[in-house]
Amino acid sequence: MMTGIVSGNLVSTINHSFYDGKKLLLVDKTDHQGKRTGDTVIAIDGGVAAGMGDAVLLLDEGNGARQIVDSTTAPLRTIIVGIVDHIET
Image (cartoon, rainbow, N blue to C red; front, top):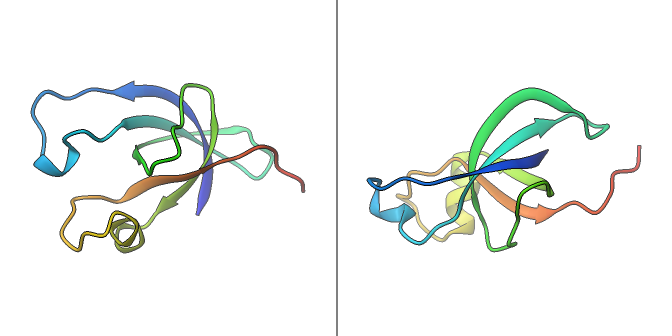
């Protein structure tokens, strides 16, 4: 798992049918202090209703992400599984 900050929405007119009706978000990865690392990923919203500027918890492992959406064949790697309120170190 890792943390990130939602930096944008992704819209595609032609995609795999799995993505129909799914919210795709651009997420800037963050370090343990909540600072952006410079890496960005595309993630689906796993039902947490994340939006622009939200700090989020990401699962970036295909099999685990497919288990969350209950599909063994989904072309999926990264999913947002939570919204982060704050980080204590």
